[in-house]
Image (cartoon, rainbow, N blue to C red; front, side, top):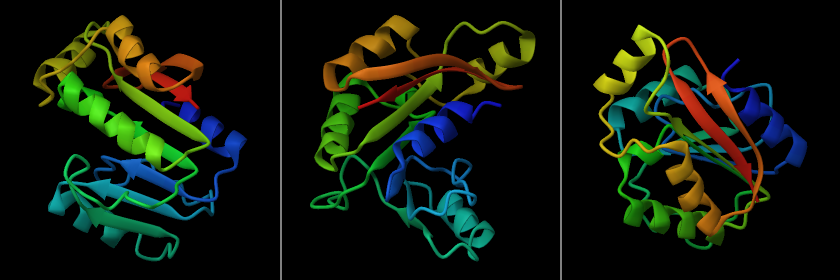
Length: 171
């Protein structure tokens, strides 16, 4: 399953709090991990949807904010950070800013995953082509950026029906 790296990395590090940067509709919120979760996204529509779907899970909070401009993370601490399917939406200078913000929350574990530009199969290739992100990078480019900020402890290719992503767990 495509989220295995997320679940394994988060559970292994037993975070007391989790933030999901670019949470979208909350797909990576796991109600089986009873850990305070904060999802942050710029889309009011996605945040509204996530709030409706997960309203019975009182430990899940969804907030509409822009990671680049918000001061929301200032003076906050999150043990686990999820940054999935987001790198390809940002130029490198913005990724560097986001990584600096991630460091400030002093996480035990950071999970980063993003699409690869050259998947096999027609549907996967079509999904990459139709994606709105304008900064799809090769794995080596992703690694260069991530290693500048974090120590990678695990990496793997994550396959789903419509996408292939490269995922890393970092400290």
